[in-house]
Image 1 (cartoon, rainbow, N blue to C red):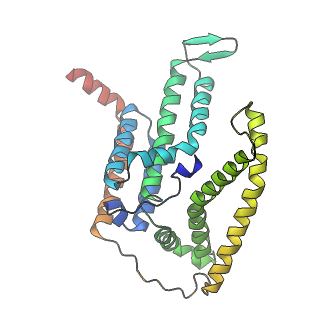
Image 2 (cartoon, helix red, strand yellow):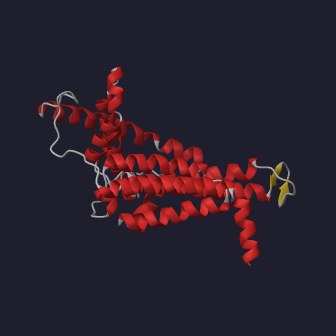
Image 3 (cartoon, helix red, strand yellow):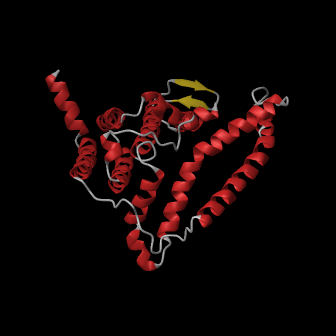
Length: 279
């Protein structure tokens, strides 16, 4: 059911990540994503998998919630893995039929790519949406992008739009689930037939979903106007963001992690040789 999807939701808690400054978490998230894409060797991939496990343990968010966050993108992950298997060539194929050739290099590339995508989803969700409220996320993005105000960029509006979009992902998913249940009660079938038939069956869902989304957007705009919302100019905050020692520790740890990933990529052959000597 779509209402079980956890993407974009905030889960209250008292963990270190919940208490961390949103600006620090945004910087850590960016560096963490960079480290994931820098990973090349088996050791660096092992390090990012271990880091994801540590993030789950430190955040206090249950494993079931983290897996629900991966659920919406499962088809993209599967397609990406299949494309890597089919499009990566090598020396000796493991399987060959007609124009299809599967190489060991393709299986390795697919496995590493799937791991990279899953860790990317887990890490970004745990560092941002699961452990940071929309208000904190808005303030963090706005203050990090504050230097861009000097060139007349609407930083506050940009931050507000991003957080509102994230906030309404669960709402739209819940609305989609309600519409689909209503259509099923009227005799619609979304599970039978081929892929094209299923896509056509979703057309009656899209129209009321768009109508509902526009109605919610209009209601939100009216509510913000009634509360005299005028954007970021002259806006005050009840809670000012301040870096605490834990935030500096988080930044130091992520810098060390990125450096470790780079070193593992450079010295992977030496590490293999050292392991061979030990064994």
